[in-house]
Amino acid sequence: MAETPSQEQKTPTVVLCIGMAGSGKTTFMQRVNAHLHSEKKVPYVINLDPAVGNLPFTANIDIRETVNYKEVMKQYNLGPNGGILTALNLFTTKFDQVLSFVEKRATSTDYVIVDTPGQIEIFTWSASGAIITDTLAASYPAVVAYIIDTPRTTSPATFMSNMLYACSILYKTKLPFILVFNKTDVVSHEFAVQWMTDFEVFQQALAKDSSYMSSLMNSMSLMLDEFYQHLRVVGVSAVTGAGMDDFFKAVDEAKVEYEQEYKPEIERLIKEKQAKEEARKQEQLNKLMTDMKVSKGKEIDISTQEQQ
Ligand SMILES: Nc1nc2c(ncn2[C@@H]2O[C@H](COP(=O)(O)OP(=O)(O)OP(=O)(O)O)[C@@H](O)[C@H]2O)c(=O)[nH]1
Ligand SMILES: [Mg+2]
Image 1 (spheres, rainbow, N blue to C red):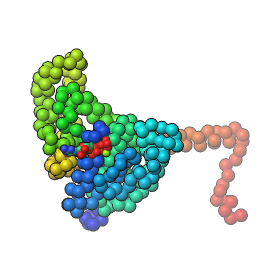
Image 2: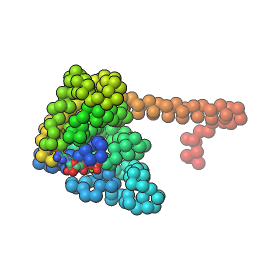
Image 3: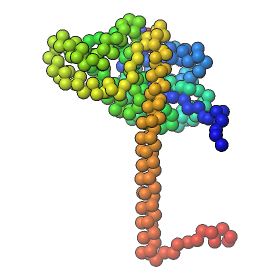
Image 4: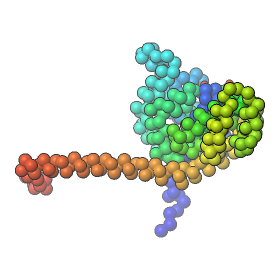
């Protein structure tokens, strides 16, 4: 019998907002949250930044309610970045609980949106960041929204550094990726789109940049051309709300990519891990049986024990 639509389970898409300090992640979260509320698609909101002073949106789960990062700094005698990392590590030990909270809301929400710490490397290059990302991506379609400070990326050298960083995150998370050029109310992202689609134009811009690194940058830009093929690019303004529809269109496309390419791979990895574990258990059992034969032990029949 065909399933009726009401029996179909909703699966929310997880949107991880990642980006350089000050690129506008938190403001973008606020905008996305407001946009979804206006469309009556209330998202599930998670804040993973222990150091944010004032959160301009209400989070369903806020790391600051679990760990006080200033206390962590004092207790472990750490600087600000060490404090944030330790706070994130402590929070990650409770992430199974976070997952069960999300699960309770999973059938009634379309999006889970996640804000990450200001210092990008704390999330992207730490074990806890990887655990959080992988755990979420193993349960739900997950996409990375890489937020870029457009006005600060107009020089070819800075642009390329930012793209290289984005590239490293793509390969680290292995998730569908959206480049979100933010602050387009200040500078349009047109130049970036042109640089990414027309290699010649970027080469010309590089040629004007007479730094000693030009030839190195020329070679790297060739490599980036390949990276651009795997991306979606949108321009937004977290302040004015411009580009929100484009962003959600990109999220929907990224979700399809997750289902078609990433999910089978994630399932294959989980199965591979289970098979290894099963093989290990079988090997231990075989060893035990061999030991028993050597010692002339007998196999016992548990079913006869029950009646005694
Ligand atoms: N003009 C303009 N300013 C923006 C926009 N988005 C964010 N900002 C400003 O950029 C600054 C940083 O914004 P945040 O949202 O705190 O950035 P963040 O990436 O969360 O910062 P950290 O968490 O500290 O790394 C703030 O002054 C924002 O008002 C935008 O779309 N347009
Ligand atoms: Mg922030």
